[in-house]
Length: 305
Image (cartoon, rainbow, N blue to C red):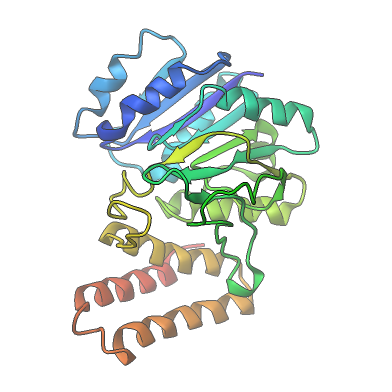
């Protein structure tokens, strides 16, 4: 099985060398790494150039920032053209064990009833804390996808492989047939909710199942690239980039469901914003954030479906 690994870089110099070393040290070697760069202005491309003697590493250098969704699509299309059998969509603000590819590939081959496989993911800055241990769609909350086990200490409580409905594209191995049936990422998202949308379409289609496989060492430097969080996992401070896109894209994602229930969730989302920033008296302290939320909310209403 030839695996195409797709990762998106944008000023990723701070995290890229450990990521590249993790790739270089993989025991399974039948892969091609596609690095899609969104016009980085730091030393990202200089770092990647140090690894291009390896013919399995291909650089796709964009002349503008096309976003995560479109960047992933570029890598996926190229990998499919190059004859890859499966695609590993992978963040580069992560570190992982040398047998990651081998283990995920083996799960796909040993369990042909599954076409996607993901792993348990831990916080890099506190390696005892879980970031993701599976996820299913919350039907009562607009088909959102809360992570199972988030911020819990790992005591082996989620060490049972099982079917799940959602995995972040931080790390998920996908059989190429899924893209043939479902299509690619919706590029209007730019970043955030593109993976939620992708797995929602997979779930609604019903032909492909996701396996959660916990026996992999995988650590995520959450928020380090988008600067959406500061420091440790307990520090829940989001930046403007995250607030803008997550708000806009949540509204767009709900609208795409085209149901009365989705519109009720949109209405409740708007009411919650008012309660948080107006009724609670926080508006005066966070007027900039409140205005950004409002603008992003209405942008989501205007996006073309």
